Structures are given as structure tokens and as C-alpha cells.
Image 1 (tube, helix red, strand yellow):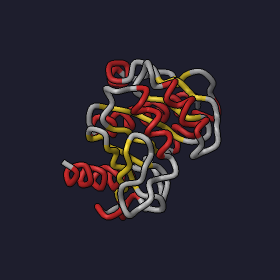
Image 2 (cartoon, rainbow, N blue to C red):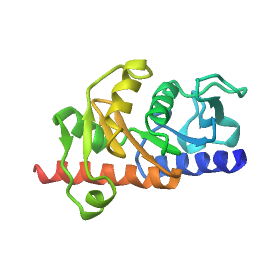
Image 3 (cartoon, rainbow, N blue to C red):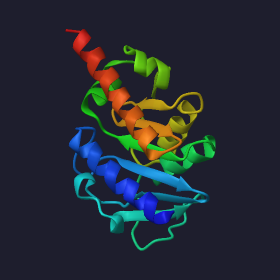
Length: 185
């Protein structure tokens, strides 16, 4: 199972970069397998990800691999603790979503039927510094009743029962943000 989780992380990390959902070092994905969390290693570049750049931690944050986890590991752990049903997380930095999170307060409007069905609502969590426990707390709180959140001036987090599901929800968030932004013109 660990090999499958690593392959998925590599595949979807590269897809995230290819589809413009993040750039360079930005963003990180994770998969929960039992009590273990497989997550992008710190410093790994999304479009060059390899299985060797996948860190393994437990739900307490203890490092179980030779590579260090992303600085946002606290965020992932907080979400897994708040949502035991979640098996995968996509934290990405898509441009329209970041712009929307700086211009809007409250929620990103739902525009498409797909976003209505799969996301229902997209709240905006207040700004907190990257990699902090405070960011982890406000994001996990926002995700208690939804599967997607914009983090003010930072990016998005989407969750799912699989990494595929979390990834495609991230695409829906970015599509919603782009359509909202373009509709303002």
C-alpha cells in the first residue's frame, strides 16, 4: 500500500504543476494509510517529484522516513484529526483562487453545477502564516463541514476519500475562482 500511495503522490503532484494549480516548490499533497501519512518532502519540486521525495509521518507528526515532510505537515495532520473520513489532501496554490482569497471575504461563490454537487460551499479561512499551528487550526475548522477551503492569501485545501477525488475537487475550486474573477469584468 505504501508503494501505491507514493506513486499517487508523484502522479498528482506532477499533474498539479502541469495544470497550473501550483508552481515550483508550492503546495503539497498527502495520503493517509491507517496511522501513516505519506506527504511531499520539504523542498521537493512538484513537477519533478519522485517516490524518494515522499516523506512518511505518523498522526502525531513523528518522522518515519529519511526525508523531512513538507513544512505544512501540521495542516495535513489537523485536517486528518478533524475529519477521520478523509484519506487524502490536496494543498495547492492556484492563481485565481489566491486572487479570490485576497478580494473576497466569507465564501467563494459557487458558479457551476459540478461545484454545487461536489463542493457545496467554499469558505475562506482567515490569513495565518504558512506552516504554523494557527493555520492548521483555522483550516481544519473550516473543513469540518465542507471539502474545500480557500486560505486567505495562501492557496486552497481540498479533501477526499482518495487523492484523485481531492485533486479533482481542487480543479473545481480553481475553475470556480476563475469564473468568478472573469465574471467581474
